[in-house]
Image (cartoon, rainbow, N blue to C red; front, side, top):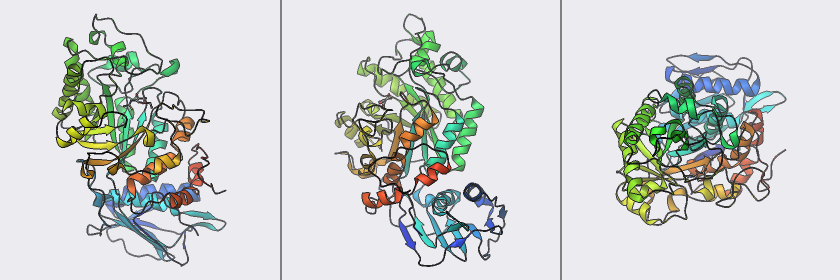
Length: 500
Ligand code: TNX
């Protein structure tokens, strides 16, 4: 039997012993707090074995021959220290740690809390093997905990809208690879994708379209809450972004009072960036910023809101800093923490602001100064982490403004050591991003995520002391079976010797 877990666990021991066989009588036992993770496990097994397992909730989870047991252990040891940086508001490393012991006598998964159990079940999902005689799980011991705390994926639903069903598939994939933050880019020039109670005109007037005049769409408060809950069940926190003060044509199209002269702008279906902007001197602008971020905070259980702040090419710096400052103040007044794209580093951001680096060509000095002032850094350099960039010149989808990103590019770097002048303790983690100028369908999206998302997931989860490209290639080669089981399209990169 071969074990090929991605991301690689901190400690993995493969026992030369018979596997655990899953049969009609296999029982699944857990305590009350383990119910969400056990339910995930039951779903996973039902999908891969065709057999539904009933979760038995009991106060005393005792050993039963051949059973699967999920237990809480508040003293569970946590393997070796992780990265120095930590994002306040996200789970501590120990909460994501788990230990898994499997042999022919049973499976025992332990964690300090529900989140660690959810991570461990993702490992079990990758271990289940289907053979002629039913499902089995190899005899292993795993001790595991993440290296970086923020392991994100940003999805642009503004350029093209994908609805809850597609995003649930994306969340399933994030869960499988132990990612913990789904950042949704909800607004841009081409569309506004979340209904806000104080500004119904935004969705009413600016959600119907997309790039190339393709159909649009938007979340209602209800479909949004359901998505956020679906993510939470899988250990994924949603960080919503309303991009200001640039990338705002959808707002200017819906609200004429945000435009000098008062005339709403036309819909925009192209893919240029940097041309639209809010105007600090207009009376409506401050109320708009306060209202949209206050509403967004009410709709968001997670600790972070993203204010955008990228690529405003038409504005003097003073006005830019003023508007970013107003957005950040509205976020803080609503008791949330602020994330902004790299450019917000030029605005003397408040301590604790998370600055998301995307373009390594920009002057590093403002970033170093912001970090000196207490800002934190999230690493999404386009040359490594932008999964809307083409794999190579033959890739039919995607952009190439920062070159091409093959699997090896996505894998072979360490977020904490990329930036000169930024100490590792300021780096909270890594986030992949997929912008959707050229991506319309679920298949388009999955084809760009797979196989690069698992590479970035390992950059986030696995210690750089353990990571190894050749070893990763060998493990990843087995994963198309998992993707196929979920109906996901994927790109057969020539850098991997795919199995089968
Ligand atoms: C840069 S990332 C952008 C986006 C584009 C993306 C395409 C960022 C902060 N701005 O507006 O969609 O490149 O790769």
